[in-house]
Length: 259
Image (cartoon, rainbow, N blue to C red; front, side, top):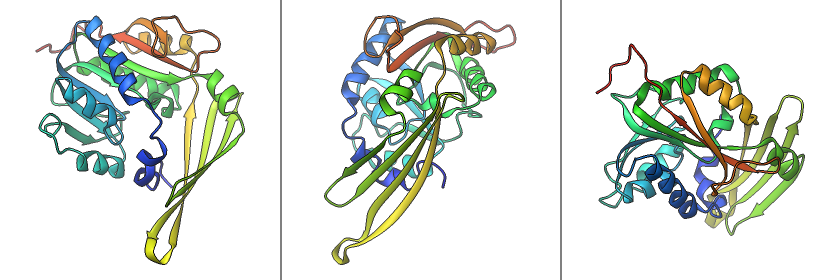
């Protein structure tokens, strides 16, 4: 089954411990540091819009891109406030997305870039970002690290029970290929009064990239690597960093039409 189809219906239930507010405060500080205090921001892999909406409330004009119809449907259902009702959600694959013009910045959180498991495809994403950024525009994205996949997740099984649904997460990490596989089994009620549950199975694949490889792919795509931080800090990544933030900048292109 394609990732984030059945899981979409319970995603926010089981991901409710993610500190979205802390992430957005940190992200906003970084954007402002590079001169982006307002304007148009595009989020790649926006999911159910938890980051997208929070940035819209902080005054940014937001575009959210995701390949999952189910996740975007949930994102649109949440748009009830004036500050967020103007968000443009697009169902597109980030490896081949298209916009109508350039944007001030791109963001991608919740390890969406780890889902791009082939180097040539990740480089293509970087090229597209560079193409749709304003002059000197900024791209900020996070990544789970090899240390996290190997030492925190490893080959483990996790289970979580809620009042009316359950999740079993079987994890497998291959140290040679740097590929991490999540095998998810979800039990979700179809007829709660009759205690009937549907079993949903999904497999998610992510890849761990070294920071050196990310720098190489950014430069190959025509972008400028700016810096990288250990998540939610201004410290350089270490061998035990579990999540890092990467900041890259648009690099002038001779044949690009700048608005």
